[in-house]
Length: 43
Image 1: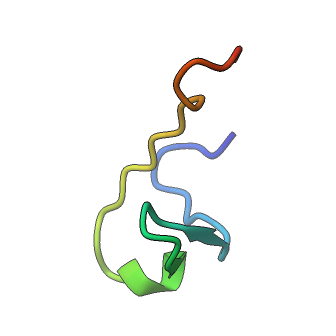
Image 2: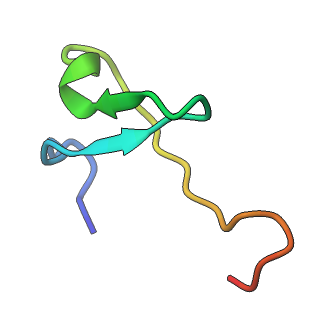
C-alpha cells in the first residue's frame, strides 16, 4: 500500500472501451484509483 503523497509506479490498464491508459497519461494531475469487483461476482 502506498502512503499519501507517494508517487504510484508506472502501470497500464484498460479503460471501459478497452483503450490502454497509463499513469504517465496523468502526470502532474491528482488521480484517484477506484478498484471494485465486477458486478455479480464474488469479491
